[in-house]
Amino acid sequence: MVEREKRNIYIINMIVLAGASASGKTEVAKVLAKKYGITKIVTTTTREKRTGEVNGVDYFFVTKDQFERMILEDKFVEYTLYNGQLYGSTKDQISNDKCVVIDPAGLRSYLNLKNKDIVTFYLEADEITRRNRMVSRGDSPEKIESRIVNDRIAFKKENLVKVDYVIDSSNNRTIDQVAEDIYNHYINHKK
Image 1 (spheres, rainbow, N blue to C red):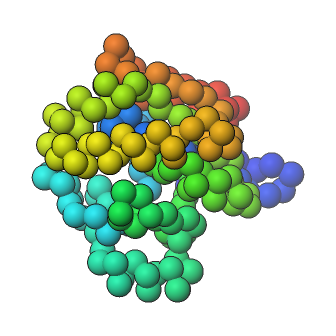
Image 2: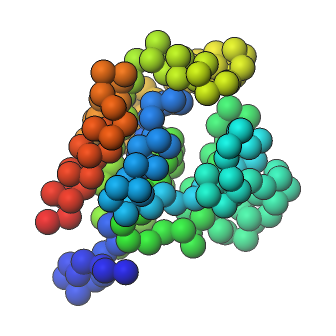
Image 3: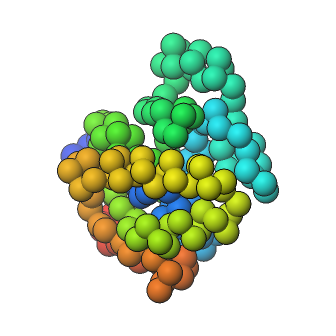
């Protein structure tokens, strides 16, 4: 692990990806890992696995009781209740050149970490694009509507406390293009 030194303090560099449901965060994180070696922090959740997801790769899937025990053991950097499910990122996942996919509350927690140089990105896509993506990945109409409604509140501009870059992730750009933009901003930020 290569760490940058700033005033005799080692700094860990990380990417934070925030955005509403189906804005492309997870897909961008996959491209960042494959093409640029920026691996995704594997977050922990109580939600059910989607088709094709792998425990320990996409998420750590746990029960609500297990998650609550982890909270009591102070294992999380941040955690949140989102669409009726618990999500959180554990302290043991933080390291150099990683990225994390989080909501605005999680963003605030990461920004409060000591000795971390966090570069934050907000992936922006319109509701029609996001709705179509959720339909194509097989989300139920009820879940789609719930996520759209919740995201209107959670991702208001005033809830995004510090965003370094707003990136258009709509259908007129490929996931590879979005990931390349993010990587280039990140590398330039580290210089």
